[in-house]
Length: 305
Image (cartoon, rainbow, N blue to C red):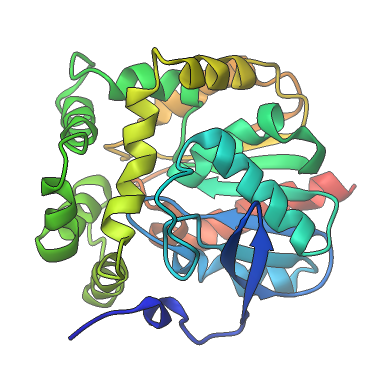
């Protein structure tokens, strides 16, 4: 059975919208009224990864929007634009298209990479940053670029990212093989994912072009390291982050170790809040939804104080 982008327009206590930003069209699931909190998903997922947090944050008095990043879900999938500078401009454009001048940017996994980058690349729209299961890009880039890292789990994760650099084969494994299952199981904690969650993500990866465009982010991250655009990106994010930062990590994360998240503090000059969630792996918003929601609500309340 063929799959199209309507597959990701999952019903729930939110409304689906399409907004124009940075020359493309982006899908967001939105609910609530109040200060804007923009949620960014990771790989190999889409906006639905935040389904537990959307209604809870809205009930607490926030306007919450979970967007599909460029190349994912129901957002546009152009052939180019998967560098982080473009993604930061996408996110900034979505904030403005939603009628806001700034937002709290919350990102998981690759969305966390983008969230870490926003204070340096799009500071005017970035009120504060929450990162979930994501270390600072300047820590992750060399980590992903070599399998000579500490620990068998870390070597396996780095090797997985290196394997994505091969053309065509990773796309076939994602769309028609067991790659989504393998990644979610390898990086998640015990019992993750359940059958319904796995089916949702496998079908979302079968939306035309998503298997390719989702990988282009990871390919750019490695291939640009010694190019001019990569050096420009590194200079842009190698700045003190003055806005408040919340960093959440799973104690059993086998993809981005909790220690790497903690070491990211060296880039934070403003208020820093850090929490390690015991018994959880890489996919915290789904593995420990109540813990993540409560940590976000406590931190957000502090921003408003």
